[in-house]
Amino acid sequence: MSTRWGLLLRGVNVGGVKVTSAALRESLSTAGFADVRTVLASGNALVTDASSTAAGATAATVRARAEAALLATFDREVRVIVRTQEELAAVAAACPYASDSTTHHAYVVFFADREAASASYEQLGAALADPPGREVDADEQIALGDGVVYWWCPRGSSLSTPVSKATDKHSRGVLTTTRNLRTVLRLTAG
Image 1 (cartoon, rainbow, N blue to C red):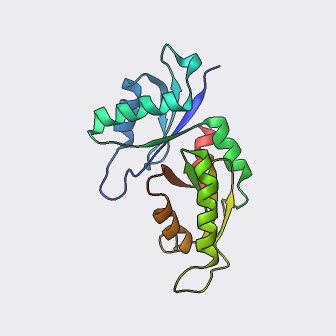
Image 2: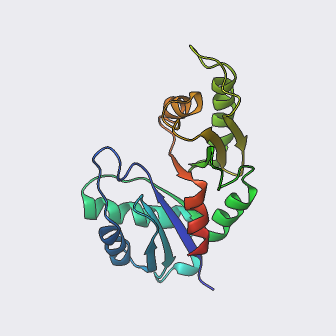
């Protein structure tokens, strides 16, 4: 059975970097991926490796092919985090936060380097415990997962919380991308 891969593009469809779903599908199809399906308009795709070496495909080889295709199509480097669809399902199942809260969002911060997740978790925990210039928000939480950090924050505050600011600061030089838990769940269903 062929492996189904989830591709999570970093930094697209924000800040003026536009990657349409149609162009993303075409780029990945041209690179030899089969059954390409985009999920939402936020740089998510599901693919099957249809190359002659599909039996030996790894996350690293899928990532390299996808990034090369995106560079050729969009004439700019687009970084990609790759997980199997089964890994995405495990990440979603292990999330300690609810996807359907009316008061909070559950996010998953993915790391390309799984060891970096632990180091970042420690840094984020320190930022959460001692946010400069404001009271600690007991409603914001983080938890460590397999190559991810789960993040629970009040709705409407995801750009201004201690964790969001620390994620931006501490992830420089480390490939990360953040997805809402509902998006991850959609990637597991496709």
